Amino acid sequence: MTALLDIKGLSAGYGPVVILRDISLGVEPGSITALVGPNGAGKTTLMKTILGLIRANSGSIVYDGADISRSPSHSRVDGGIALVPEGRMVFAALTVEQNLRLGAVVPRAHGGALERLEEIYRQFPRLKERRRQLAGSMSGGEQQMLAIGRSLMAKPRLILLDEPTLGLAPIMVKKVFEIISQLRADGYTVLLSEQNSKLALETADHGYIIENGIVTLSGPAHQLVDDPEVKRRYFGM
Amino acid sequence: MFQQLLFAAVVSGALYALVALGLNLVYGSLRLLNIAHGDLVMIGAYTAFWSFTLLGISPVVSLATTTVLCAAFGFLVYVVLLKRQLGSPALAQRLEANSLIIFYGLSVILQNGASLAFSATSRGYQFLDGVHMFGGVSATGSMLLLLGVAAAITLGALAFLRFHVAGWSLLAVIERKDAAAVVGVNVERVQMISICAGFAIAGIAGVLVSMTQQITPFMGFPFTIAAFVVVIMGGLGNIAAGIAAGFVLGFIETFGVALTSATYRSILIYGIFVGVLLLRPQGLFGKAVQAR
Image 1 (spheres, rainbow over the protein chains, first blue to last red):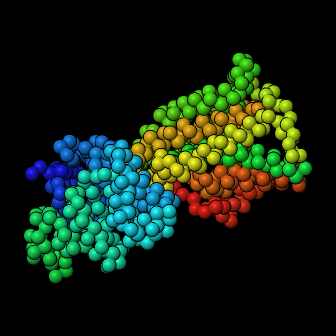
Image 2 (cartoon, chains in turn cyan, green; image 1 turned 45 degrees about the horizontal axis):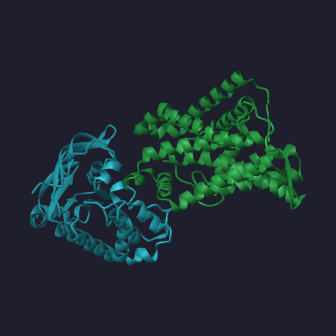
Image 3 (spheres, chains in turn orange, yellow; image 1 turned 90 degrees about the vertical axis):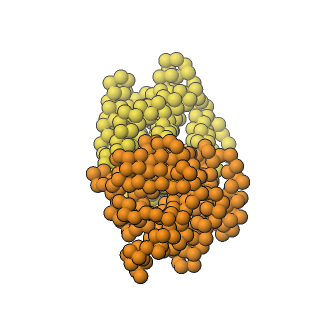
């Protein structure tokens, strides 16, 4: 099977500061791929580089057979890549419903946007209850639901989830992981960056461990979960 | 007497709201302090004046030509002066401060260019100056036209921001540029359109002003100041509150001058400016956006 996302030799950073060095990574269609590693390893930078918020210094990002590493963010979103960013980044001054409908701003998402909105309301009844409320007034967990819903409005094929459980209560963490599994069941491809390494690798099909901007280990997620070195360093066992 | 003052306050409030709307668009979506904003009002005023006196073209038509002219000028400024700086992360960081200098330069060029071309003589023309009376208020046709156009544009802007997805894209860019890019908003295009619209609105305000008062090449600066007072009262980048604040300034100025004397006008306006900055720097109506 050809990968939906195929990254080769990617380097990126902020100005003169290089964060990612020679990253290679593939994401199979219909799978969950987990990026795990310590804080500051470059996971968020990688997510932003895939969406084009940060320019790649070198290397290629091939999505659906075409190199997108030079195209602007909005055309990547229009190609079917959606990011649920670290810290949610919902628009506090807009209502819940405006946030969701703004998620369908790219041309690819115009058709059937209202049907998708109803589907998202069915899936997240909480968002429907609060549709007229300003997004800034919601709790962290609700904002995370909103950020995920907003990404689905873009009619994506590949969903990038960056630290979706950061700062959430344990019960919400469990709920978010249920949603992630459901996304795969619904046919979406997911790239998940997560500090909760154990839960992430237990849920994912494939895993990459990133440290100091390089991939140090990769493989089927169930193998990584059982790897004694991974257990010792990331699960504290 | 009271109704007459009320009407005057509403007219000047609508004009302030309109001028400030243009400034707020440019600040909100680009974080640029356009202190040449009032000079675009002047450009609009001269466009209407020369069109009327040389070619006999009605200021109503000039509203359209000025819109095109000033939007094209905004596009030129964007492409020549700003695009490269906004595109580079290092330069973009300093651009908010540098924009003061860039636009100050632009302001000097526009004022003195106009002075050179048109002389510094103040000018005016008569258009719709017949007085209408209703309910104890006497108003010229030009005042009613000013009020109607300013109200239509500001209310239209409010409706656009509330009901249209493109309006939400603009609010998204104003609130968080990076998050707007995440959902696929073409941030560069929103910024380009904002600067064109902001310049065009200033030009339109100039056409309206030229119908009701004398114009000079240096008439813009008081409008720049008034617009900054209004925008800061409403909260920088907060479009809807800025429109409300325009009316607040119109009321305070009109009634303040009526209760004291015209010599207190500047004291009132700058007093409000300093008072708001001291007591509510985030604006009268809520939160200002962060500079990022």
